[in-house]
Image (tube, rainbow, N blue to C red; front, top):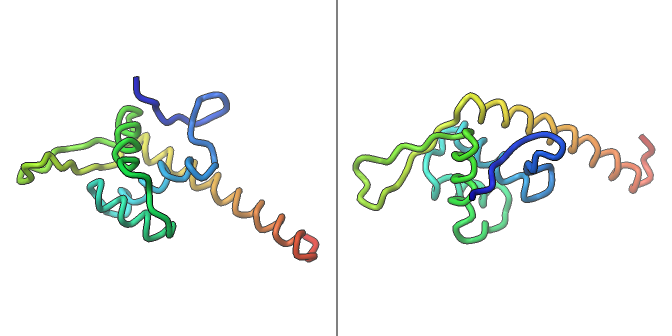
Length: 121
């Protein structure tokens, strides 16, 4: 059984740890127009500055699809079975909520760094 991405306490969702950034990044890439796995992987690696584990992008895309966040369509002209992905309304909602969580985490990190540097908040 595949793991599915969900939000909320106890839902087994990705949370805000580094691994929880990957589903958000994948959804964001799809929303920005990157449509297939290799393209999405390449752009995420460029932005994050670190390579993704081999096959991880396809596991993440499979989980997002199983969770109803994305829909895949086979590329008709590709004999290898390359798929094109698009967001569903549920994926859009997950992305919006996840980005709000990420902004809040960014504010918290800024406060911690400011305190560390002696600049009281």
